[in-house]
Length: 204
Image (cartoon, rainbow, N blue to C red):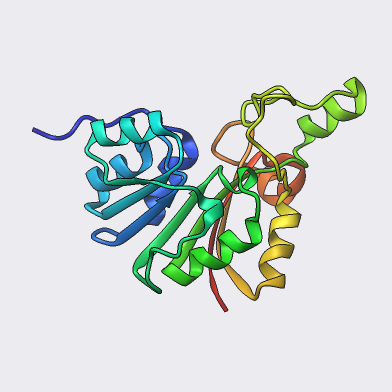
């Protein structure tokens, strides 16, 4: 009897399609383990998660997802160089103290990095800041300013500049817009019309 698939975010479905079958995957800030569960189910990966929240770790265990409790800001020193085919950071880079260090560590322990990030230059965010004068709230930024876990909000242009600074090659970029499937404007002007983007990165 096939495993019952869990309903997950649209960007996680797209990340699943980017991962080759039977590969080794490390999911950083894996949350409740939905992505790893789907990767094991659909891609037969050897998956492992790292998550700081105790309740999320418990949810991973209940799904049968291998996970360790740990803080990304303390680094990935327990993992050997090139011990994974893919290291994934989905909607998490904005919540770590040192995003630059995390990117370097991702591509130390993994051959390929996959990063999905919330774009703070999205037109709805700009609109709310300009006209309302308050910190924006959208589907991808649902928090109030005083309870948000996000401490390093970035834009697509910022992230691409950081990759260039660190000699990282962007192998693939997927832009999601209002339809959650991207579109003409999301791909032509992603920094304005894409609220979420997925990057596949490697060393040059």
